Image (cartoon, rainbow, N blue to C red; front, side, top):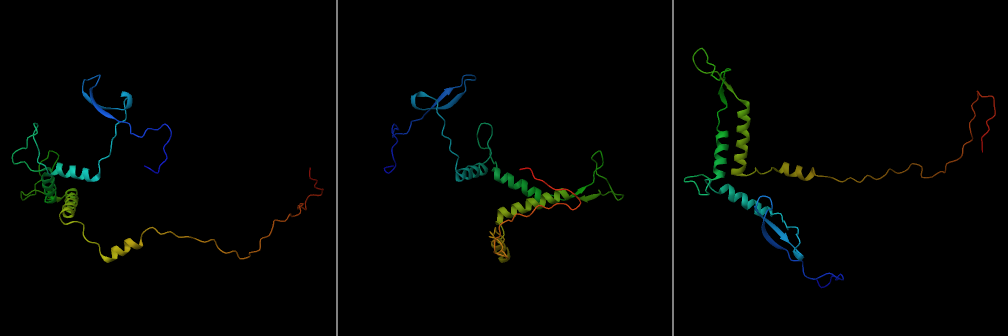
Length: 194
């Protein structure tokens, strides 16, 4: 920077940091360290990955097929994303009508031999939520109506400046000394210590 002032004793070059791989002293595992000027340990530069890189990594991970322990792709394996989609689809299409079970786990039967059926609210709620997520992913968020858009613009944060009220009598009076009041029931004279 040509226009910045140079501090006396400051070198122009940036300190060089070299990375080395050494063996850990306890378990002989390879460890990456950074050495600065004079061979001293230096702080590693750790940069946060950008959101674009994280998104790309997650997409690649979810779109890749599952692998076995050796790292080979399993034949006819579905991607992780497809497995998650199938699991959500199974939740959406789950039958909310379930048979009533006794203590031993056997279905309770009606006199005609058919099982007693009830509608499971938990399965219904999970089905509705999974349906919402699938529709949101497949079709995107529904467009907002004009009333909703206007409500978003008018219901934001508003700043109100409240002016102090105008004084009725603008004349400012100084405080006057009032004479000391002596109670009427005392038949004495009040003397102040000065």
